[in-house]
Amino acid sequence: MNIILLGPPGAGKGTQSSRLVEHRGMKQLSTGDMLRAAVKAGTPVGLKAKSVMDAGELVSDEIVSELIDAELAAMGPDTGAIFDGYPRTEVQAQILDELLAKHDRSLDHVIELAVDEDALVERITGRFSCANCGTLYHDTANPPVQEGVCDNCGSTEFKRRPDDNEETVRTRMQEYRAKTAPILPGYEARGIVTRVDGMASIDEVTASIDAILG
Image 1 (cartoon, rainbow, N blue to C red):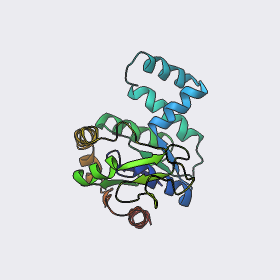
Image 2: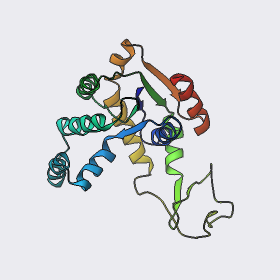
Image 3: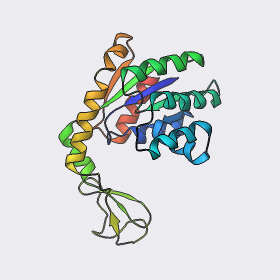
Image 4: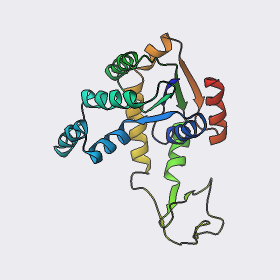
């Protein structure tokens, strides 16, 4: 089974991808992770990507398609693929169809984690973590039992990601809508798009995705 998980940053794609990997043995294909791994390993496509990034330019669709092609070639035929945050444009959607066909695969589901923008802003801007052990917390949804003390290791040092602020989150939402809106009609015409309430609890979202995948 090959699926695309869509949703703006903070919608929970990474969490749900991890659960699919754990419970169904699928492989998560995140272009960012693949790029970093290829650069670190010094593969031919990784070296090509590094020179582009070092020049401060965006990595081309051609390079990304080479990465995906290599990953699909290395995967067993019985392993399903989760495309996390890709494709983002109509051109990338076409490239993905061609790559899947090349490896005798097809796209089974496009699942969009639908979110409420204001609620997502609150979810993301409230996130913080223990600076020592990395345990995740939230100002209102999941604060430490004892204020200012990590439940897990007892540290009193916490940190927030610098880009977890309202302005950045709303900009990301705007970019997501602008880039993703054009690719959905094509998938909807094929009858493979399902929307899930991304604001529900993690377990509820997982159950909804399981019901879709069967």
